[in-house]
Image: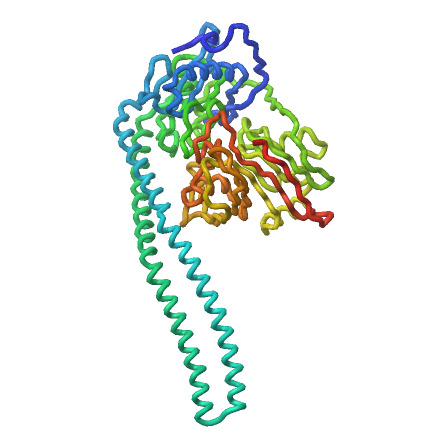
Length: 548
């Protein structure tokens, strides 16, 4: 189970372990002190060595999952390596050479697999019901009838004013039977218009009510499915929590149930497996690194070969207990600020950056997501600490990013974004040939908190999302398209491209909504910004051609 460092790296490898790219940390439940375990250059080098071994066997590429390495110190003061995988690997919980599942897992294997399959089936059923074509048809027809009623109301109001004026003229011109007959004709026109309005409403109800019944029926089914999902999840969680027992470096063992209300799957990530094994085999952790390897499912945005922090839902809540008993260490934590950024426009009030793909707009919550446009400029510019990003671009999207140099400018520009007065134009390469030369996509988007940042089309919970598009050119089996987002939802253009109710074809390199891989960047670029300068009151237009 224990490996030598030389099994993963060259014997002559030199590392600077004063540079820590991430801390695994948590509060000790006994002392209340903050306990830390670093991800160092050496642990990352060992992880890269493991990646090479995984790459040599294509079996590991089919099933995407997290892998981890833990550097430990043995009783003889040697540094050795443990390795683990999250969940199951090739359908097994225990494989020779890998740290296996925490005790108690095997006894629940059949029950867990059966329940997880049921939960997956329920999830797919809910998704199908949420994306019923009838919802889209209902929305479009409802908007059409509302528009027709508005137009009819406007016409009738105009006719009513005309009849009123005509009545006044008739009263001044005619009397007796002729006047009565003329007024009756006007009254008949009014009655016919009321009939016309009732008929349109009747037509609307006859058209929409059957669709509404189907949607209501689907919503009721969704409600029952969600209730069943909640019951199954709680049952499995209770069963697993009572049977899983984790040991820390104080020698304390607690079941997940004793550790608190934790989600299903807690204890099956790499970190708890590795730390539990080390604690029960008298090994002292030195450093740890976790990374993703293999294919990526549509519901997550993991990138093969990239390091990730402890998962927020399952690992972070028990990290303090897992590390309890380890000696406290003081290590210098340094962030490395990489290459400078291309500044497209700059004055005393604002900056426009041509952000490269793969760089965050602002720092993330965890230390390994510190590198960003804001953090780099914070180190490079005298007033960098005052900069505020007026909007954001996805990690994988390149292009123009607008930054304000003080709060007053930020508030002014942010208001322009809210009022939709800032013109934003994106360019993308999508798979296949888009048949419609131009148009507008209106699909409401919703982000399930469990699968962030994934966005889905949801006609019930989704927020209004509007994107205008125009085909620019055809290139081989690709289409170059220009997009103008009217709203600014997360992943809006990406979903509007990939969803079958939108363009129905994903952007090249989209790992989340298409079939992208780590070798091909997302071919989406923010190429133009046009807005009113807060100080000069002149329109400022900036362009940055796409790098693809």
